[in-house]
Image 1 (cartoon, one colour):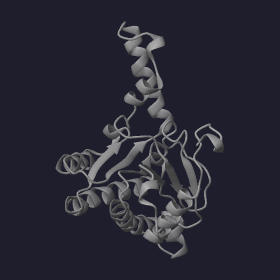
Image 2 (tube, rainbow, N blue to C red; image 1 turned 45 degrees about the horizontal axis):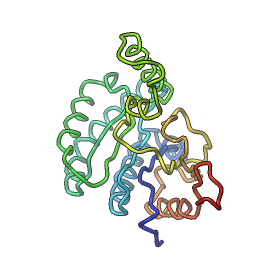
Image 3 (cartoon, rainbow, N blue to C red; image 1 turned 120 degrees about the vertical axis):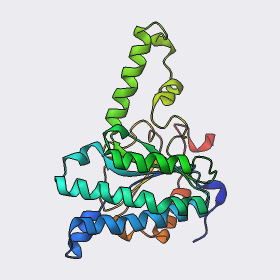
Image 4 (cartoon, rainbow, N blue to C red; image 1 turned 30 degrees about the vertical axis):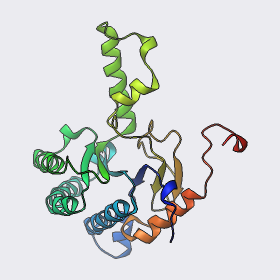
Length: 241
């Protein structure tokens, strides 16, 4: 499928949904779906890099996911640790930089160690920046931003009138990343689920019934082709563009 390189999103975000349902369809435990989903992550990251999209953010583990059964959470953390160890070499080969957003201090120490190590090893790479949203919640991010700015006002370092959209952006986890242009969600669910609430203000939304483990590079290109056929007006009329 041919794509217009001039009309690619600068920032693509994906809610990777459906691992558990995919495993259930196969008659397998949920963790089997997560393992297959991790392979899909590798394929999609490589495809995004090859296509030439500079920023990719993946919703890997939400703050709400801590409520899942303890054994599943432990298995997910173990899988994440293994994934980080294995993928660094591939990211280095493809000049991909790893980033992470969320309340990272709540992650198990072993996972944090592997995560920070992978981020440090890839920090000078200049192709796609891949941000894993881990222990992430959009409302929590906005709450932390509000508290930080309120504290600066209280300390006399800032006036309420000086708080601008640009300052808010600089106080978020994604301070060095442009707004989301395209948000994809797999598995047929049509909701945002507390993901990048500020950053998706003008994003195009794309929902597909395909479960994440089955989301192929071809399906990604289909979503991008759909995006390129949309008119992004940002409040203007068609005639003003």
